[in-house]
Length: 264
Ligand code: COA
Image 1 (cartoon, rainbow, N blue to C red):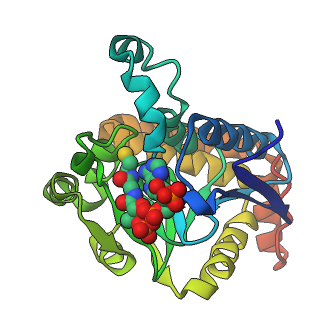
Image 2: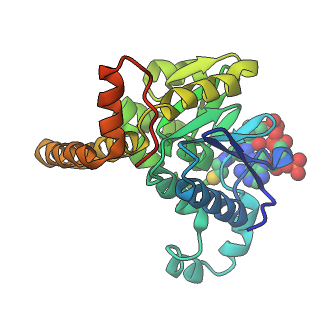
């Protein structure tokens, strides 16, 4: 697939997906969403890629769904409603990111609003520039978050804080996001990508299958009971004993050297 709205790059073991419609604040059209999903599959299937960074170009990470596309959809609302699971790629994107097997980092450079906030929340880790702003402005436009905003934030900051953000539609700073607990780290704007790469590298040097299975166990744990979560953890942990990397990790420890993990 040839990309028009995103840039896909690889540096060492890190893939970077940059949403690249800066004049429109990187808002999501169906095409942008399709391209991001294509790039996610590409990164997930590439043995050289161990971590995926998602960022935006210009002054926005992503200012949400391109509302100009809604006018067309509103012309035949019943058809729009019936087809809601089929043709709105935009609403699938957060799930696709969350279900990506490799760890994902959102490097939030500016506005992360609506669907943009939902993309950031579906990543495993959020690093934000001090210039970043987060918010769910949907109700100010007569809508509501539709790609996980009402669901994914609660477990990070609590139900009442999510309600305040969604009901008011107000924007908050990266620092406020950090204090609330959904931003992992706030950095100077010019250091954002270096910080994201440095974090990505500190993950990429570890055993990829171990990181992947730990991600699955953590995510499942938030969706299920403690008993089932612990059972997932137990099964996945013991699967690691079949991997060459587990052997290599233990051997390197005994030999007092850095392990060389191969993802096998
Ligand atoms: N859909 C479509 N176009 C959008 C957009 C969106 N969600 N958000 C921004 N844009 C476009 C603007 O129309 C403008 O295009 P133009 O130059 O052709 O007129 C361009 O992006 C730049 O935005 P602008 O509003 O001029 O920048 P600003 O700095 O004055 O304001 C925001 C920035 C983010 C505060 C403002 O653009 C905004 O509120 N956007 C809507 C965000 C939103 O509601 N997202 C959720 C949608 S459900």
